[in-house]
Amino acid sequence: MNKVNVIVKQHINFEIYNSVDLSLLNKSLKDIAPLYPNFNSWLNFRFRRNISSGERNIILATDGSNILGLSLLKKSNVESKICTFYVPEAYRGMNIGRDLMSKSLSILDNKNSFITVAEERHHELKPLLDSSGFKLIKSIDALYRENSTEHFYSL
Image (cartoon, rainbow, N blue to C red):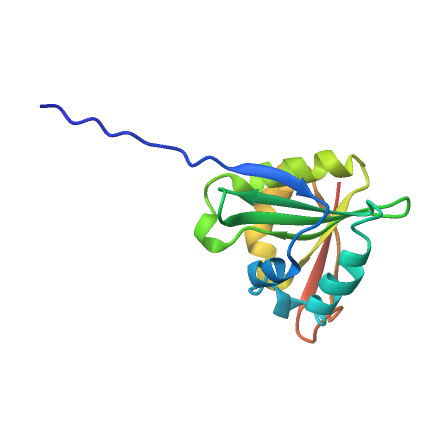
């Protein structure tokens, strides 16, 4: 009897949400929250408050029961920004980041979109940002935390 290896690619949904359980978001972002002072307050108050106006968007990549990646966006007359972009380590290498970035840029639909990246995550995101058309425009030391550099990328 011949054996055949069958590879089943996990089905991943990318959906835009205008409301989501913020405790679930907090849990999903626990690894990056320490990189930004008052992150949970920002998420629970400033970000959440502007979801209903359409100024903020949430894109979740899910497999039906798990959050595999997420992007928090700000789209206003003044700013077009990827505020938070994260794929947990367990789900990296599955092209989730590439697809999530593509959907994020499609929603922002602005050639002046930008993202900032903490020094600790810079090496992870730089290849994706480069391949998505972003260019490093400046780096600022101690912007959010002492002994850390924040990198600014723009399309």
